[in-house]
Image 1 (cartoon, rainbow, N blue to C red):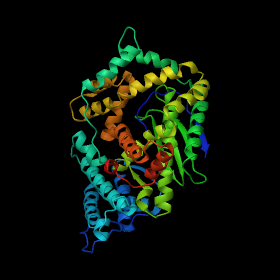
Image 2: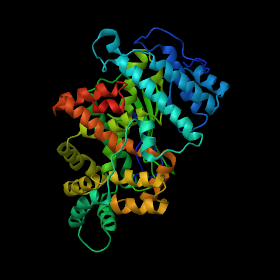
Image 3: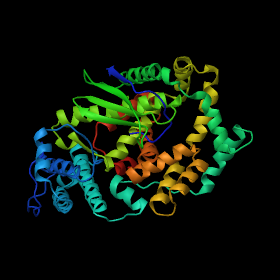
Image 4: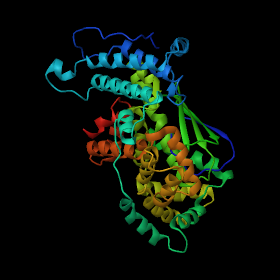
Length: 448
């Protein structure tokens, strides 16, 4: 899922070829500690996530396990208190599993079995928090993001953004508010609706080509792109299983040229589509771990998913590579002036430095310090969002709340993790990035 952006285009479709056990709340059984997560615990987790889907329509982002598990969740129809009680039992059972170091005397916190135990426990804790929220328990923005996504975004006052705004003001001189001047500047870089297909298909093809140079994907992986309206997000990947995705692009507002690469990478290659394909291939099929056949949206997994999807744009393209490809391929395909590509991305990079302003607006809005109008005005002033886009973003806050931290903070955490381990070497960066995509590592583990 990508955040709200500007889109306007007719509806088209393009194709790119490229089980839970019954659960009752019981007391954890006394047993000798083990470092192995048994699949019955993982199946209990899947059952709880599917059960949550009947109380929260956004909760189950993807599921491709046995149909019988979904049917059982429908048939049992657990209440929120029952789900919360069962989650508490599951967490207690996972806590009894001994770390690797207890068994071998050497810490091995990076082993996949250990990462799996940590993942299941933290995902289950987030599920229990979501149960409490649906039951009416209010959390402050930072407490909510910590409980759901295993991370807290830094705070930034107005002064943090002033230097960038001053630079942008000098770069876009003229009368009127800065946001209006920025909007006028960007208006020359809108992809015409009748050219969207060719631009987006060219971007997808290049992102896929670059990804396949470094990541081995299974034969037959594929996704379909559809254009939709009246959504609070700009793009969404609905993973279908069997190495396939449905990618929806919101067309409510104009689509600017930078969104072609951003969406092709974020939703497709090497972003959400590749992330889900690798989880299915390596963890569900190869290892038989059923918990990865379901994706709970309001969970730590989302910070990894969104962070890798955003950082994946930079893994696929260096700044110079992207500029060259846009100038030589995408600008001409869109009928835009290629000689202005460098100018556009210079300004685009400056505005990118303001992205944490959206987090501040969400924090203050959800904490009750801003009403909708004040939150939209903040984003117009400090994040350079056009008023209609800022209002759309508040709809995103209403629906997804503190989820907004997963995009920028997630990207920063993933970037720090990958860059530290790769030492800046491009080939090693791809290897480290791919390994992260195919692992159950938590956001807190990115800081280690």
